[in-house]
Length: 112
Length: 114
Picture 1 (cartoon, rainbow over the protein chains, first blue to last red):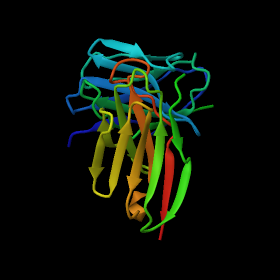
Picture 2: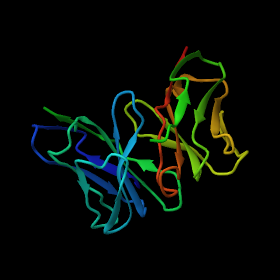
Picture 3: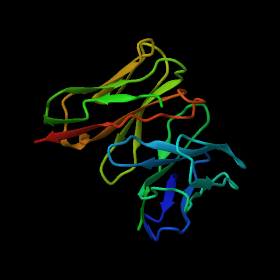
Picture 4: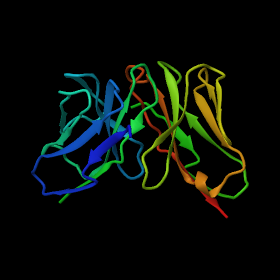
């Protein structure tokens, strides 16, 4: 089955710890994205990548980092510098050229 | 920050009712308009991607129109069914970057009751 997987589904961390969220796709898509959802807000773009070893900041990149060493994988690290890390995180992928994005199931991160 | 507005915020309809939602967005630097359906406990799923002014797309009982000159899109659902209950998101692309970069609205939450 082709698709996007994110793990884990739920993640709990203590304040001050970095945490890495996994995103893998086997759709052979060039572009991958990380979004964050907070109550009452639309999905906001954190980082995106259109090609291996290259990525761009989205609208709310502060406190986050990413890597794109393989086409299939786009992990997101939530660093201790992120002031409000508790949120629902969605990963997506697409072909290049403004095509529809395919979303993973999401990871709900809680930091206390 | 570029505003993408969706209305209404939420909607309750009876099974069989037809309904429509609005998405408005800045018309400058527009590349495409995406509609997604997001059911509870599932991933958002693409419904339509539209690029041309006057575009109309249809998938079953759901259809959408696009006006790029005035910056709005309508989503219509004919004869709503309980399985249509979901949050409907619109997202224009190109507003703050390339065609792959979407700016999402906050969504319209639809509840269809028996």
